[in-house]
Length: 324
Image (tube, rainbow, N blue to C red):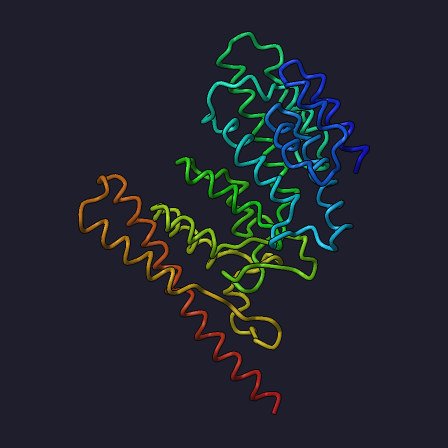
């Protein structure tokens, strides 16, 4: 931990924009005092060093106390969330004030130091650009690539970073990128049994989505058409073996894990909210049309779901009768 801390602070010390006196005073301090240093590293664009120091801080705390979760919050993932929310997403979405950090080279360094996903070579187009606007767009794209990489790498059943990232997109009035919505709905891995249940596997580090949470996020923020499409797509999704629910309806048995969860209360709330806003003229005509069309798709998927439930119930009775 001390070695990581020294290397990270050294990068910050030689940055001409940092306060060298403050950084110098941090060198003798223990790893346990790393929180402000981690924020400083993030602020000046040294993302990889900040994350390394956050990991060392969490490990040191775990050695000392037996846990890396003071108050139930994991120190490393709190730091990662802070990085995404305060520095990376504002830069990626171009909502931050003009700031010389991060530079494109720093974002590329962050991409190169992560283990999987997009490589820096895929976002190098702007390195030789002279136009300030183009450079800004390239920096935004590169930073978004880093957001994607970190989100895919660190989202798990225990640490749903993807949902935090989605919340920031929605709060900023931005549509979720396809990769993020697919991650949250479970489409990226194929829909397993359970429909809207928080999807998990025997390995809790493997994240398989949480469509119910995405449904609530969309509904809470007035994105009714998007919420309807989450319901429709989840109810009609293929399973991880590429089979539709129609194909499996007659052979589903609860004792084999074929148990579905559908958040009917959340869907009823969504339906009623759409009724209110459409009847009171809150929405523009084009938006109203879009929402009502999405609700129609949701309604059709629910009708199909109830039909399949009847088939499954009949198949279950037949299967159990044959066993007797």
